[in-house]
Length: 213
Image (cartoon, rainbow, N blue to C red):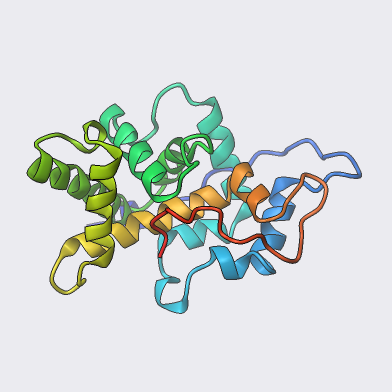
């Protein structure tokens, strides 16, 4: 069997209009943040470095094009409507502000060009949280309350990985969501990008109630 379907694809890049002399384009700022002060906040430890999100983050041009595609898309490229809503609710619970930052449609664009293996892992994780909500509360993830979502996320994030698969599902989704959020304009501004400059010192994490640890 051919392995082509398992090989990650790239999003074709298109020429963009050069910014004014005083502006620092998002692509340049993202590259600088990920190679400098922002790297310690956004990029993973060596144990997590193989996650596919960080391959995307190493290509700021690809990130930029996926964001543009997400903004222009009228329908999802990979996920179905229920999966998009589930991802949006999960992302908001894990990193507050993700809905406004359009994390779900952005990840939908990245997943559309991912390997089959990574697509299946993502869908498996998304489905696992939906099933956990149904099992415990009798309703899908998007229909349970914020406190119920927090309880399931807390259980998943503290589970022993060798005992519960939910820990691995949580970690997989968290890396996708955190990487997507902090490569968005909203997240980059949190890291110090103003449109003209980016700071060498970062603000503290503004999501004390998030599930990033």
